[in-house]
Length: 181
Image 1 (tube, rainbow, N blue to C red):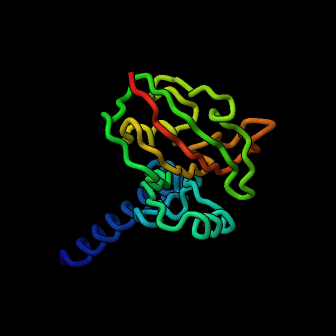
Image 2: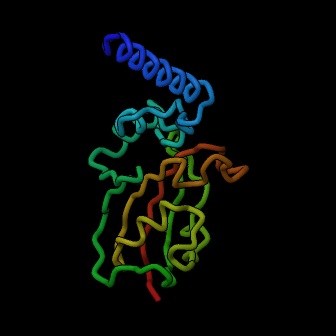
């Protein structure tokens, strides 16, 4: 008897076993990805990220018209230095005193002002609910004035601050860093 038919039978048996194993693995889902909808490339993941924050077209146009030259940070915060300061830079954990005017980006309505009250706001840097304030003030020197544009996710976020600020409202602040302690 020749060895060729026995060898062919062995190869067929091996191929059949491999296909059966593959079918069982695929059917059972043992090697399935935990999130099969997640794209493989970084660019695709970034484009389809549901947590990625973006401004509306109307907000982008408003910023371009009203605040040309505003410098944008990676977080989405935009800033214009109106007057440079000559004091030290504020650090996390220090108490800062600021004067500010707060407006809604789209309609420009003034809804809060420390200047109107005549008293600067004091708080510990890093503790403000407005993450955009924390970010901007970390790079400001005492005496500096800036216009900062807070996209909704760096302002009051999804919930807003009723009744003055609706959910997902971007804001503009004129800030002056008066004092650092």
